[in-house]
View 1: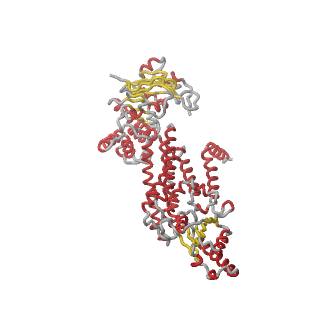
View 2 (view 1 turned 45 degrees about the vertical axis):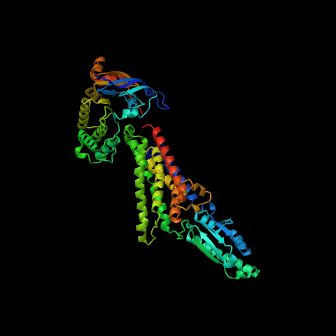
View 3 (view 1 turned 30 degrees about the horizontal axis):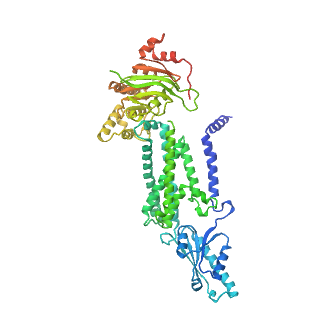
Length: 376
Length: 251
């Protein structure tokens, strides 16, 4: 049978290519695991909405509402003795996804306000309003029957409001949330040309010339970093332009960068540094172009999955949420969300920027160390 | 009057996990202006010696002085004065020849009119005027080899190291390479040349050293070596007489 020899040959070639086999088996396995466990209904439990309850009124009726809400499934309730300003601050900063605020004058005004984090989808907002209305009415009917007070005959008003650090209450649209997220994803794919070029320089022997030229490895690497930052910025602004000019042609809202251009530029540079540091490390560790072109993107997809690009972090299973803190894509994505959705300031995102910069320094120095150790 | 451009004494190199040393006490002296051939079978230590000379790898022990500077201590100073033509085509294939020249010229600190002039001279030296603005990947093997050579000449090195520069080269390109090297040598550039083409070495080199098993086993002018070995009429026969006929497969 003439095809036996080619079969044996192909199998032998595959067995000799250990890295190729690792790529074929281990990386898809990682992808299957990470993508699956980051899905909202993974591990058989759906994510609970974190809700802050501030009951300033402390009336029998308000206490009954709090008690009923605490019994609801799907909510992770925290009670705090907060003022209105602290309640709004915690929601605006994303510490809680929603806050149910029952004021001191509840008996008089008969109004409950629900404050919402702008990342909470409209559907959940609607559910929260409906449930609150239903609960208050049920309690009112029961209270009326037990003569808890004449003032409770009038139905309680439920008001809801999205709240942000910058005081802008506009609910972010799909464009505002998705364009920066996927732009970041694209920026990190710079690993393919960057690592590929480093591997090619080694394969071609150009590295020999570079090593004896009167220029340090640091200067060469720095030149590469700067070139790729420029490329990355162009890439980011081309993608953001799609949100500004192309997506509106399909009837979608326009990306709103008003007043945030400088912040976006700064996040872009820091995200770019992290992506380039990662690319340099992949380029130093891999031995062939094929390895670099496969391993790099694979890790990026995993970092995007755990970093909240594919599925928002708050919708991930509880066990996965702390893990997302270790993804540079999460730091960059959160920076964009804070600025574009929560209208935060650069000071508010300083720790994310610091994390991105530290990631760059770590990966870049490690990459230089590997390059210096490696003989030609 | 000749002066020593390279002085090597008791040079040893052992690679990690290697059973035996790649260099086992190499002693070598090359005078200024020499066209020196370094010959030897595969795996004899030629490339290791060249890599140590250029500072690409460190020796395990031994003394080295190049152009009056101790190496590796002053390798950065030395590297500004030496040129290396690697065995591989160490050029960016997607860039044009001129773009490659410009990049390496800048690395060596050339700029402005001086850079333009040197690039023009190098393009002419490689006889590639018509193709200078075409990507290297579109070149034939011989053209690539010529380009690979002249990029190492951009900074006008005093000492040029060539690691098998004529592998897979057509006779016309080989002739151009020889002409360029002869001209450089006449102008005072010292050349260290490794090759497996022994007739080339006999024709070009003023002195040759034959290496085997990490040591220099013979060193003299090609004529003297031929005369000293009974029954040998050319350098190829001398080489086989000294290193044996058994295969030297190295990986």
